[in-house]
Image (cartoon, rainbow, N blue to C red; front, side, top):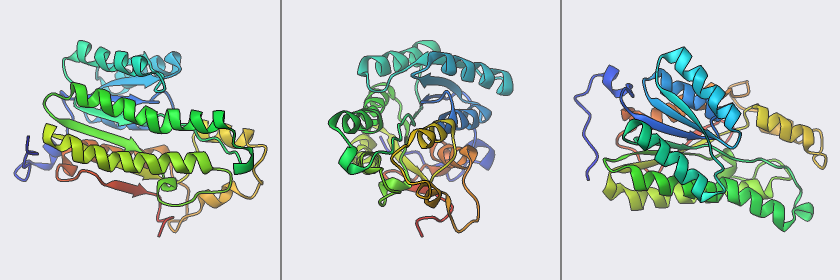
Length: 266
């Protein structure tokens, strides 16, 4: 299934997601909520998946109220394949198709290597790496007319991060690898796969992690917030790049992971 040539399309059509259906994992807050908002603003019908079903439903209601689109919230634990499948099926049952899937759900614990036990390592990989596989697998099953999968990676997928992030850094390298392999395998189905790699962005989840990071030196985390552009990123800085990936503006791209890092990896 060759990718369409959209060269003759006007810009207004390239950025429109009207009539398309998107699923965003971990969409109840933070980056996921910001991404869902940009997709909804462009006209997409959005299923917000989150391990906290109340957050998911609240976010979906907000999208519908703000942008006049159809949106739904669903409980989704990306470490539970049956949960991911149920949410995917719900999107298709409700709207008849699936066009975009954003694998955003992730965890970000800070634990030095000598203190990283098997349970911590396995939990991080279950959410960040296997959760991305679960979403990719369901999207590939349901995108019968092609589509786009976007994996939220991290600059940690390109280099070592701040101290105490061994499990996180390793899991995000895995996500980058899965992005490339998925792009190769799914291209014949007309499915594009792209990654977005943010630098540190203050979100509710990140701030909670930092507050709980008893083993991290106080000066370690600010290292993650520096960049040549002179400010830390916002959730919408990342959401706009994810929107670009979902839109037809990126039609000739697959397998790449786009750095959204304010130049911090230069």
